[in-house]
Amino acid sequence: MKQILTHIENHIGIITLNNDEKRNALTFQLLNELIEALSLFETLQVRAVILRAKKGSKVWSAGLFIDELPNSGEDPLPFNHPLEEAMRAIQRFPAPVIVMAEGSIWGGACDLATVCDIIIGTSNTSFAITPARLGVAYNSSGILHVVSVFGIHIAKEMFYTALPLSAERALNIGALNHLVPAEEIEGFTFKLAKRIAENSPLSVSVAKEQINIISEAIPLATATHEHINELRNRAFKSMDYEEGKRAFYEKRKPEFRGH
Ligand code: LCV
Image (cartoon, rainbow, N blue to C red; front, side, top):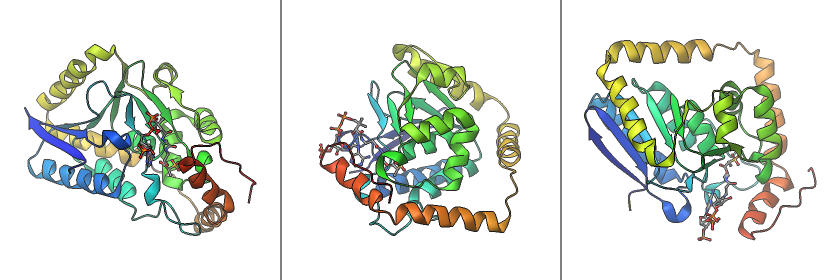
């Protein structure tokens, strides 16, 4: 079964997450289908993309599919992970990707939403980044995404507590572009996408690429990269990492021991 549904109307490409029974968890299959959809949309020169869950969803996406997390000792978010590939595909996509964010957004899906261009939510939208719940050490690019969208203090609180950030707080800090009533979000999102699609696609595309380049320009010494890798190795080789996954399946609170 396809885990995303796609269609195009008036130069707007719509991608609907279609894995409700697993709360739209980001499986390798779903992520690869997302990458394929963006490639097709680029060929068809769509001028805006809407990335959404089904109307009225309580969960936009539950984040990475925990069954597909590697065993202890392996990096859970390597450079070539389908989530990383999907995020780079979104950043490279030559038109704005708009998140129609109905429902809670968890973990890797929160990271994915931060690399999109515009996020529109309702009062039941929330954002949680959850590595601390699973004993995972998130990767640097993901941390940078969250810090750049939510700000360093809110990002720290999100990483430390793994608690959802409400739509109101996200709107106050500019992480959410618009917070609209649930019954209006579909019309509002399509109207914004239509407005973008009526503008010069070249000008919009160049603006997107320039903003992405300028906002990511942070020089890091090689030794700093190596230090970060050593830190992350310590976490994903830990017993805590295994405990996080086990606790999820046993539907209990994890008991982390710090090693
Ligand atoms: C596999 C799932 C999932 C799921 N994977 O429905 O950012 S990091 O570092 O953490 C990164 C590694 C990452 O993204 O990890 C995943 C982080 N995600 C989470 O911690 C959220 C885990 N999910 C939940 O807390 C709940 O499912 C929410 C609150 C999203 C929805 O709760 P609700 O009561 O509506 P269920 O929990 O009953 O889930 C329905 C089915 O989806 C599966 C879950 O195991 C259940 O399957 P069964 O019906 O077979 O029991 N499911 C949900 N999330 N991320 N499977």
